[in-house]
Amino acid sequence: MRPVYWLSPVGLMAAAFFLLSPMAPAGDKQQDQHAKHFDECAKACNDCQRICDNCARHCAVQAAAGKKEHLHTLGTCADCAPFCATASQIVSRRGPMSVLVCESCAKACATCGEACEKFSSDEHMKRCAEECRRCEKACKEMVKHVGQGVK
Image (cartoon, rainbow, N blue to C red; front, side, top):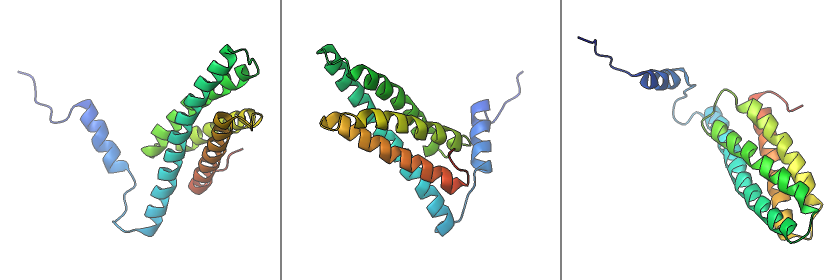
């Protein structure tokens, strides 16, 4: 007869994560501020991911219409979006690799924002550039808050 296991490996990992997570009493101002930085960063990354995906589609349509100058921004937007999506996921759960992913996301957003800024008369491109700059700033602030700087 097989022994009965109360927790599956997944259950054990969840229990370990819960027990090892930094927990603070409700109302702890420092912990509330810490959570706020992570939440704001995760939201900015999520918003940026959606805008970059939308802008990549816009660039594809523009390139198909013969505006080949949009091919570069098609690539930067298409590449930036998954950086932002991954950062949003990891930061929202306050993962131990939040700093690493936010450093990368900030750099991706800087590259994408710079590329999209070159099309300031195009509303899609302008909005993408603004969102990338907002996400870049949020990631840098989160990294700074955690105590490490983006190089």
